[in-house]
Length: 127
Image (cartoon, rainbow, N blue to C red; front, side):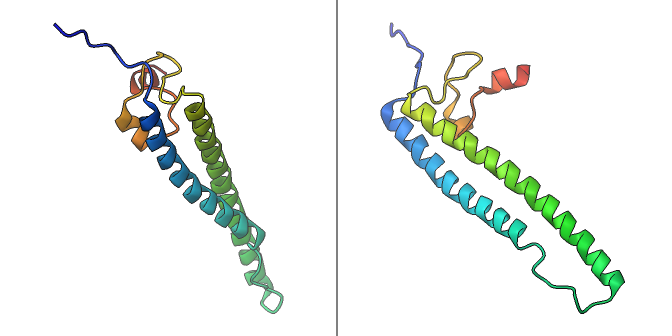
């Protein structure tokens, strides 16, 4: 009879696969973050000096809404980048993919979908 030992961590090869996935996601996330920052910096490029006062007021309101929107998107993206960078640190420490609540391995499928996950679905649903 075969004794099935439960894995306690992912192999170095598996960790490298996750690292590659995270690096790809990081590149995309950083590009999006830069785009949002650029939008924030250039939100009022369309000058309204030669238009009527009522249009200027509407335009200023729209610019403010745009800035708030891009600011929220940039903030969310920055947080996502931080989570991905922390996941890379866990890969280097060989603690990646271990649920911080249960101590069990987070299934590969979950990590492929959410590579920065630190909780298994079991632990997440308990929250």
